[in-house]
Amino acid sequence: MSTSSTTSTTSSTLSTSSTSSTSSTPSRRARGGDTPPPRTGGSEAEVLRGFLDYLRDSVAAKVEGAPEPQVRTPGVPSGTNLLGLLNHLAGVERATFLGERVTDWQATFQAAPEDGAADVVDRYRTAVAQANAVLDGCADLGAPLPRARPDRPAPSVRWALTHLIEETGRHAGHADILRELIDGATGR
Image (cartoon, rainbow, N blue to C red):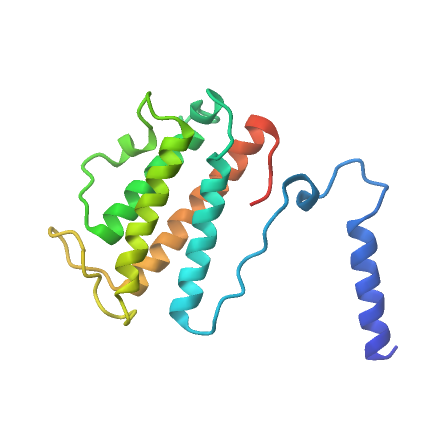
C-alpha cells in the first residue's frame, strides 16, 4: 500500500468513526464544544504562557453559567465545589505572581456566601490580569520572580509558570467532572 493510500484510508477511518450514527452517545466535542490546546509560538515563554492561559480560560469557563446553588455545592465527599476551585486558583495566582501571603489555603476552597459565580470569575480574571502584567515584565525565564513572597526565596519565572500550569490543570480536571455532574456540560 502506498503512503497516499495509507493516509487516505486513515483519514477516512477517522472521519467515519467520529460521525458514526451507531453510537447513541454524542462525542465529547459535540456535547461540549471542546477547544484544542493552543498552537503557540516557538519560544519557551510563549509555549508556557499559551498553555497557562488556555487552562485559565478553561477553568473559568466551567464556572461561568453554572447554576446556583450547584456551583457551590460539594460534588464529592472532600467538599470540593466549582466556585471554591476558582476562588482557590485566584489565591494561587496572587500568591505566586504577586507575592501575597495566604495563611489558610484550605479556606481558599470556599467562596464567601454572598459571592456569586460572576463575582468569583471576575476576581479570578483580575488576578490573572495582574499576574500577566508581572509576567510581561519578565524577559528571562531563569530570573527570580520580581514580586515573590518576602518569607521565602523567589522561584524562577519558569518554575512559577510550570507550577501554575500543573496547579491550574489539576483543578481544571476537577472542574470538568464537577460541571458534568451538575448539568452535563463537558468540553473546554
